[in-house]
Length: 437
Image 1 (cartoon, rainbow, N blue to C red):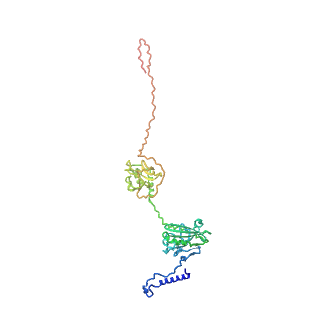
Image 2 (cartoon, one colour):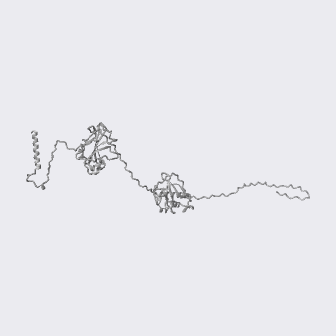
Image 3 (cartoon, rainbow, N blue to C red):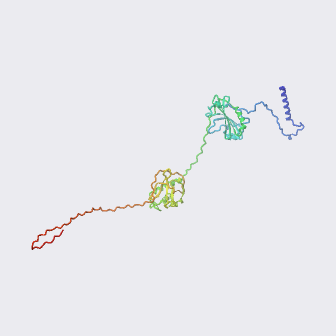
């Protein structure tokens, strides 16, 4: 083996020879082409790094106010301060002091607070954030167990949390001060596809974190203010005329109660039938049960409202007479009984009847379906099948008080009163025979 000085001299000679080969053109000095035609050199002079020297790193960042420092990954950019600490609900328990990112694609994005979400990663690709726990957050006072500690860093005990969600990979290190309740939080976030490339530099940056245990906690988080309520639009009252019309129908129907039933009649004085009664209550000219469809339309049983009607046409009536009623309200919760106004022999009545599926619910044209049918408990009254015939009150003909039958007093059988015949005296005329009385 040669001496160290001799080895150094040999290395110097080799370097000079390589330098000469680099800077001198091949073929000698006289063979050099003109300047404008000379090709660009493919090698440039550079300083050969010492293989034993530590790898080149970025400069350490330090914040004396918050007592934090770290060495970010080489070539990364520090985020704008106005992009830190966005307001969120629930509030972020960490107060960001600094943030570093792999790139800044759109500078206008950082003119306002930007959250650590996939929206930020779409521009930054990877982020490392350092901060302290806020006053009142759940991080303060929640010291880790000894079994949870992953590292000790100058007065701090570290715990790590590795998560993946929404296509993002997050690696967070919590540094809990051993002498105080201060907590320092360093978060590394990258797209899951980018993580394999940036993970080594991120974790190396984590090992460079330094913090002071005596510094204060971060300020309390701001609760986002509720959005201002828009000025209320002017309220335009929408008046549905159907409510008033329905009330008028029931009022007219109630005003005709007691009118005598007359088949085919159409007079409140001399009498009317069921269809004439409903036509008047609806405020129409006279319609029959078979023609009232011209001014009405079909609805369902569940859509019945006060002032609607239920119609039995002659075709569906076994007696071929037809009948129609005005619906007022339901009389039970099962909707099998209902309050109606109807003209029926002997006169118009307001009563409870059993709902009959043969009757078709109908509604006067122009009325809306707004409103709710009332529930008024009631009991149906017996319904007469045919009009009763009036009974004439017969006046009793006065009869004389019968006289007692006189029993004739039996008369005694007359007896012959015999007048004694006088003794005949010779020479005298004899007397006549006696006459009975």
